[in-house]
Image (cartoon, rainbow, N blue to C red; front, side):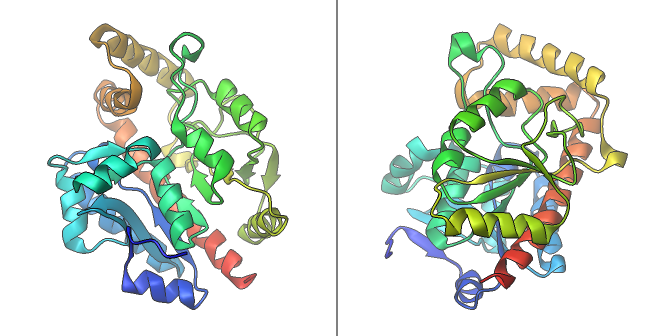
Length: 305
């Protein structure tokens, strides 16, 4: 389908035409999840990891009235400096395109762009979900609706641990989204390898995971797949300690009247401060690990044609 707003880099366009593996990457983690210049180093490192595994990285963003799939070094710098860069979910896309504003893609918008370009695997840190207290605030991430409708597999370290994970998984079940554990029966909780909730199934190899993805989409079933890939053990943080930190950050958000799409960046920044930067280091490592695993799955998926 022709899309005058979509701009795919020549390298990625060629790789997709040749049936080679491509992994989508978001830009909100750069513009709203990390400070400058650490985010510049991260952006190059995560792309290097994807290339090192044998896949092609496709970082996404909205720049100059275009949905960009694959960024130049200069465009990555723009996203990392984050001067006037907004956080863009599905509802915001038309506004940013029509007005020429620069926007960072969330999980939801990265899925949109990936599907438009023909990319089937996406690596991120953690998905959004049902926020704690959502029964009164109705604060539920648009990521979940995107997963229900958009045919992209999302490799993540589970849902961000600041969310209500049981309710998030209930929502995904209702929407028919498979939640699969990569080498684990337990659904991971971002900084922690276990959330106390079970994944729908444990899958032990990238080849088996790719076969499941191909089967789902060959059947014509709509929507994506959540692939929970636990943080490496050496970077895992203590669950009880993190719960205490998260509750402290939630209290701070409530006191300052933070809500909506500003909530997650606010909480992550405070969690970083409260843990003296340890959570930030873990965040980097889980994102790198997700990029590795996503690349391996994309390679196996490409073999299936």
